[in-house]
Length: 417
Ligand SMILES: [Zn+2]
Image (cartoon, rainbow, N blue to C red; front, side):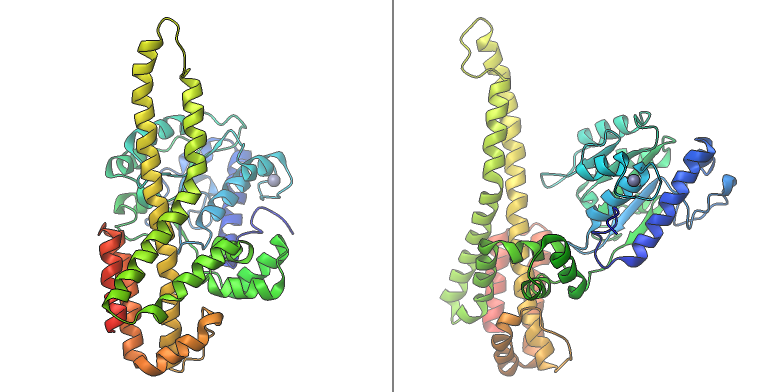
């Protein structure tokens, strides 16, 4: 049982739907290329009657949106579905060349778009749409996976919409986004796509996959799965990386440290600086490698004829690279800070459920005693106010408030209650 859907944790309904669609897609290929074209712009929102026996509710469509909370496996699902579309058996067997190359990221007909910066620009999207219109080299489908489709700029969204409205016959777009809220995906794109909602996988399912696939000890897997709140990648990192565990412990020490105004500002600085350090560690290596590669390509150090002109051109390219790297660093910082805020929210959520005596397991078993003490001191109302302060901070940063200002406001709110 190791087909391409095996790593999609706790998403049984979505897997059933995707398997059915992959089978329908294979049937379309067998019937000849015309069938899916004849189905016209198939839309989940407004089912059309379809010649050729392609039922829009179970069959194949040109455009899909995978939604779900971070870590639920949106991109894992999209990649698995892409593999099933390239699978020679049409099932996502996990064994054939189509499955192998897609899962390994080397299939010529599958493009994964992973935005490194804060948004996906129109230039990138136009180039992508153009290439996606070509005939699939492997004779099956051209698949374009857009991770974080909520980061499309408006112009890029319009370029994509055009392609989705008049899809090339063998092209399939798979978008990933947190939700179908208009803030994440434009209403017009949404109306042209079938939506596959993923849920937050239960901790038991996450623990099971850590044990089975990553060989992690069951007790560690269970602790990490609960602490990561259903985020599979985060759970794996917590189980394996001592640095990640140390950072989490520092974040969870915050509630204890809030003893006054000064301490609240100190805690804010510590949180921001920790996020910056984590982000820097994650991008520095890539930055250095990219810069070295570009300098080599530009012939840095050349002294021959034409070197001066080359240097002028090189400066522009280096500037472009620096811009891209800066954007990536900003995003890495925000992601690191967001992870910390999610951990902190888990702590106050534990205090709230304890104050309410709700029969649910704590997110952070290792700080459960501390959360229990908080529950007694703050009661349900005070715990809820603190939880809301953390969530408000996340929302503010999402809405482009300067992280330091948002975090300082949050720490003061957590201290005052
Ligand atoms: Zn296969």
